[in-house]
Amino acid sequence: MPVSSRPRPLTALVGLSVLLFALITWQVLADGPLVGVDERLSRALIHPDRLSELLADLGNVQVALPVLALALAYVAWRGRAGGRDRWWLPPLAGALAMVLVPALVAPLKEWTDRPGTPAVPVAVGYYPSGHTATAVVAYGAATLLLLGLLRSPAVRRVLVACCVLLVLGASYGLVRRGYHWPLDVLASWCLGAVLLAGVCRAADRARRPVTRSTRRSSSGTPSSRSGPS
Image (cartoon, rainbow, N blue to C red; front, side, top):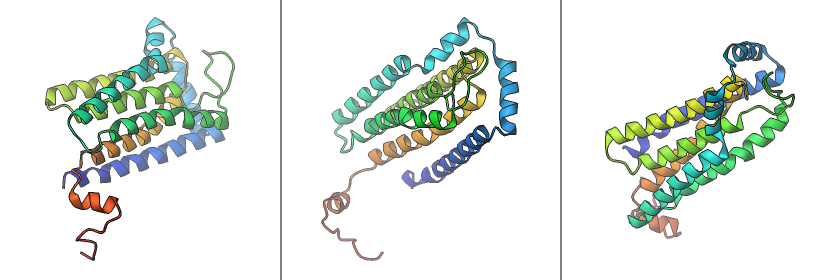
């Protein structure tokens, strides 16, 4: 069935993201060999300029959050106007994913206590990258929810391409400007992928037709197929 064909690769993506995030976090805490590679790569990539500054700004809350808010409002309006039973679920999931970004990133920054690159003032708390996680979740959630309303394959491809460019642009700008180490950005990609998987599942659930048996089951009334199948 089309609805059940997505959970398996989605579960694999979540599992891979969690494992990679755990590996990177362990390396950062233990000052492992990946950290040395990360620092050498950062030194080769850092070149602060105006373009990198502008690209890094794509991960600012002031830039990314309005994009997500507009998308959530539009999806909610279209869903309610279309008479969908669970029209509120996708925008709620998108908003919750965004709220979870600072709730997860802030304690991780304090726990890992990673110093910044030589291009920023001496401080700690740079892992993972909050700006990257903001860009991934804000632009990613907006894209996932809008895709469900678009019928033109060309428009869908353009929307996905714009999302990828925005996330990659913000990530590149953060590393190029020296605001973050590459591993900070990669870890936030993993964190964002897990949060977006939840948004994707919520959107799929909202698209499922609510049958009479589903309504009865959800209200506590046993349906005609309550026995073994």
